[in-house]
Length: 334
Image (cartoon, rainbow, N blue to C red):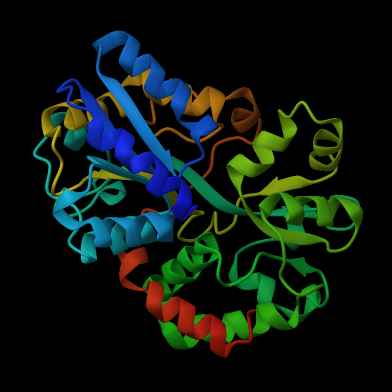
C-alpha cells in the first residue's frame, strides 16, 4: 500500500489546477468515487483520490507534514477521526451548512471532523436456533446461555473497539471488562475474518449470534453473488438495547487537513457530502443510514424497521479507545 502512495504522490504534486480537491481515503474507492464524480460533474472541481488503510494514511500524513498534497482525510470509524485530530492533522471548519446538517453528537466538538454517514453495530441471529425474545442487549451476550454460540471479529477491528469504547463511556472500565471476559468465554471459535464472515458463520451453523455492522448485512442481501444472498437470508437482525440507551452508532467521516492547498474547494466538497442528494446516494447505494433523519433509507434498511439509537457523543469513542483496547486484551479477546 505504501508503494502505491509513493507512486501516486507525484501525480498530486504535479497538479497546479486551483479547481481540485485531493483526498486520502480509507473508504474503498467503489464506495465513494461515484459520489465524487457527481460532485465534479456539478461543480467542475476535479477530485484526486488515494485509497489505503486508515493507519497507513495517518502515518503518511505525519511523515508528509506541511508538504502533504492532501486536502481532506476521509475515513471509516470515529476512532480514526479522533486520532487524526489528536495528532494535529485537522483544522477547524466554520460552516453553517455542516453545523445545521450534522447532529452535534455526530461531529467534532471543535468542528475539526464531521460524520457523513451512519452505521450501527447490531446483533444478528439464526432464527431456527434463537428466539427473538431471547435477545436483549450487548451486555446479555456475556450470559452463560450463549456459551459456544457467539461469533465476532478480532479485538484489532476498530468497529469492535468503538463498541467497547461506547460501553466504557456508558458504564466504566470495570463493568465493561467483566462483560468482555464473559463474551470471550462464549465464543464459538477464535475471532477471525470480517463482518461478512461472521454472517456466513451464523448461516452455516458455526455459531448462533454475531456482532456486525448493518451495511455489511444489507450489502449481502443486495449482492449479485448468490451465495452471499443465500447466507444473508438465513439470518435476522436484532436491534440491541431498545429498552435502554439504544443501538451503538458509528460514522464514516472526514476532516479538512491543516496544510490544505484547496481549502475553499475542500469545504465545498464537505458541504456537498451532507446535501440531500449525497445523503440519498449513501442511503440507496451504500445502505448506510443518513445523518439527516428526513432522508429515506434503502428498501433493505427500511425492512428492519425503526430503532432507538444511542445518542452518545461520538467524541467519547476516540477518548476511550485506548481503555477499550487494553481491557479487551486483558479479557483474552484476540
